[in-house]
Image (tube, each protein chain N blue to C red):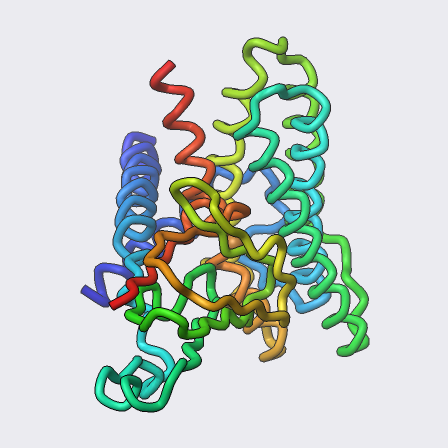
Length: 179
Length: 132
Ligand SMILES: [Cu+2]
């Protein structure tokens, strides 16, 4: 079973790398400042989507979910910033965090273009996909590559939060598929 | 070229397998519920010693334990040791709520009736108090 998991984990990393158009990244290991930057950018991404939801949605469940995303991801950023300040690490821009930034910009554009009618479903579908992607990246790239133990354990602490967000998003998503 | 596609597809299939296995396989509450031994209410000494204090820890997006038995008049305290804010809210009629409990803070309540409760911020977090 352990072996099976390992094979699957390797397959995930492999397919993530295959799917990423950024060739500069490839197999090079991320440094802690780069990991910190990626973590902050990934959280900012979801706060950006939540802001659009607050402007465009009228659905109570979607608005509540967006509110939770904004506050939780902000607390994660606050803790990451506190830790890197303590460790005297300056987050460093890198191919991975730049990819996250440009993808988030595309997603914001897509969400902004939605009509009031189609927005909620588009937002929640993206939340499901986004959290799946971030969980995979944190578990398979950021945690294994983090050198500092405190940074590693902060990332590990974030995983249950991300997974609860995913479950919550899937719950809201189900309500839309019933309509 | 063909083998490249097979490899890629295999990667994608594995990704799905992995995600579904991981997400649904590892989120059972039992996995993380072994915390705070000795904090379970004991029916024997509570009958004499008056109201008891029960502690529920909130961590990793779960209530630990997520199910407790208490006696009428006991106090339950929820300690938020998680990295985000949570709340404790009666689930069926929203009869009572802690409002937002920030990370590091705690909230307590005297319990007189059994209740199913949840975190209204993260609706997948649920717990249960049974008054014996
Ligand atoms: Cu919560």
